[in-house]
Length: 263
Image (tube, rainbow, N blue to C red; front, side, top):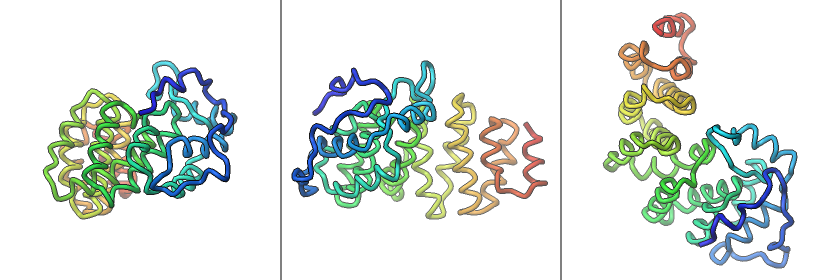
């Protein structure tokens, strides 16, 4: 497995030369290597975009993305490159997930999502291992993966794993738990969303307030308004303001104002 130390000396926002990739090196997905994905991404790196991304994803001291490195490749471009490598061996995907560069890890989680249908149990195991070793460590990485991997896996299974993740000290593990429930909401089931939302009322992280409020809002839209209103009746007074704001965003103005006045 490739160590993150290989990239530890890179300056944030500095694109590197594509040392590994030339047009005659294209492999079939089943034989593709992480080095080819890295090179294809690095070739398109933009230092200006990297600097912007580093600010946007809060990489400064004490911020949630502290120390993350960007090469400056936008998400639609990463997705386009990933499409060329779907079916890549899971060991090679693991190597991408252990990279220091954010876009490499994004490619890794997207490749895991693409691999889920063919090898769901192994993908779930590898995904959880990556989450627990801190490689799915920004909100976009969580939001691009959890609902598409853990969501379908747990839809008809025991969901105690989500309670375990929601109780973690790791912000990203807690967000993984909440975002997984989006898949349940799409199937008309808001029970896990409500359970985790109640657990996380006292969470101190703004990113969790946003995530929980977002899922509550979706439960109200996609399952039933009564699901959301019942939760608000019981908990609006204790909800962090951001969580309450997100949850009530699509309610009628008068109803929204009534709940927000409970804070």
